[in-house]
Image (cartoon, rainbow over all chains, first blue to last red; front, side):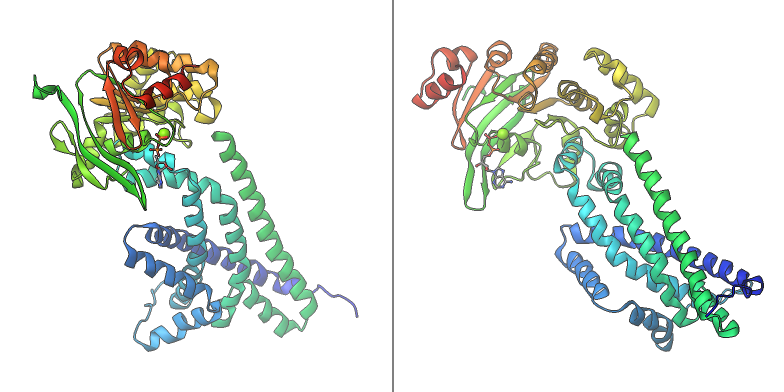
Length: 228
Length: 251
Ligand SMILES: Nc1ncnc2c1ncn2[C@@H]1O[C@H](COP(=O)(O)OP(=O)(O)O)[C@@H](O)[C@H]1O
Ligand SMILES: [Mg+2]
């Protein structure tokens, strides 16, 4: 068998566009994951038991069911129950489809990020909170200005890993027809029949994205270490 | 009890304070008053309940029963008012507890700007003035990790002072320090006392207690077992337990 990459001359924009979509998808996923994750962690650590239980149940359920089921649930099942994400005209792409994917991925990631954030908050010395409260600061002021910044610094490596995981796992949203890197790759090999070459290129592009991401995060970490 | 003369002088009043952790009775009915300008040193063996007592005063621990009145207002039943009371009760910890994510200046100005809504520039100006008083004006932009224990504790004191508290609580402020740094911290505390600050200090520094305290409380097994002037406590201890304790810490 011989390798033939000449199909790239025609198809390379598919890989680039796919990679772009994957990155956008991943960034939104991580942002949603982080925001919802912080909320889940705060709920879980709060004094009010029912709220804490809701957070724990959510986390367990999301982590105990397949991401694919969650994605299909949001994309197919919710609209059937009348919960439709409206199309926004003038965007030039299928917004409900894209938003469903991001929402499902973000809500899934949040369950994992929530546990990371919770561990990060718990790892901050209790003396930090006591000092802040003894000065008259409120619980939220303490969280916002003292605990979360320290927790965030400690969990940055774990959050970086989560970002890398999301980039890889986002390939699953090809199943609801989002034209990200994996979806586009499948388009390329179905038209060109160059399965081997297409998938090699696809893997390389994923690797460049994940490798660059972890390197950039490594630099960020070292910067933050130096500052304190 | 000698709380006869001027009721307005009483800044803290502790009534039948008890504290229980699970099955462990840590405080078994503590009664005392702290008057404005008084310097009280609390002594006693490890596990006697000194830290728990001190931490009840600003409600870092919620007592099981009894009450604490700060200028007549209940700390125990403070509700939403608790933070306003805490503003006026400064606390210094054994482990310093400077905010690790903030530099020295921000450590000092964080609470004044957030809680008192102080103007940032004014707060910084005052922070620098306070730093000058403890000889650390050149450390304004340093982070806690770059400072020695003695420097950290002096800054922790400044941080508490920046809120203009009416009373300062110290929980073994020099116990975590290398011996050569104890002096610089006690020095700052002594000057604070001389300036008229009301202070409640848990400490094993008997020299400091003898020199600076107006009153010494000896805690034993969850109660104040003896309460008197340094002269009374050191020269005429009443109980065998106090004599024993003193002979241990003074040698
Ligand atoms: N949060 C807590 N939970 C359970 N036990 C505690 C707690 N805090 C203190 N204790 C116990 O209360 C007793 C008195 O502690 P403490 O007030 O720290 O004494 P001291 O400061 O005089 O050494 C000790 O036996 C200690 O183990
Ligand atoms: Mg103690």
